[in-house]
Length: 98
Image (cartoon, rainbow, N blue to C red; front, top):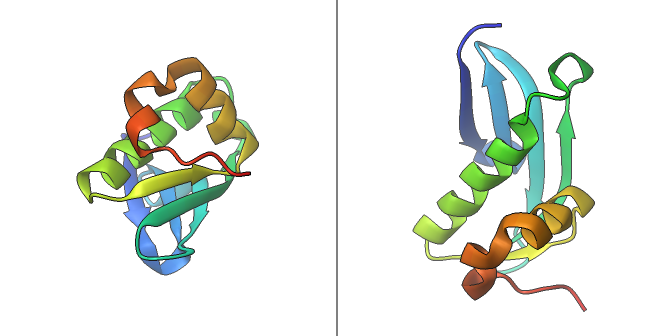
């Protein structure tokens, strides 16, 4: 495993966990309007399970959304769970789905 990095891939509508050139995982999103980033699916490759990478990816992604002045909609079950555990600091930019 080389150095793990986190980055947005806007062309693929996802935030990615990068192990060198390898995509180790991602958090896929939709852009339903000009204000929201709707997280719909998070996935980490089996070889990377149990390292806390998905949690770090979600933290990176939500911080990026906040920095851009946008709001989040959590449809992805992983993001929902993450927000329930750590999301107090993101409550001001979270719009829960109906």
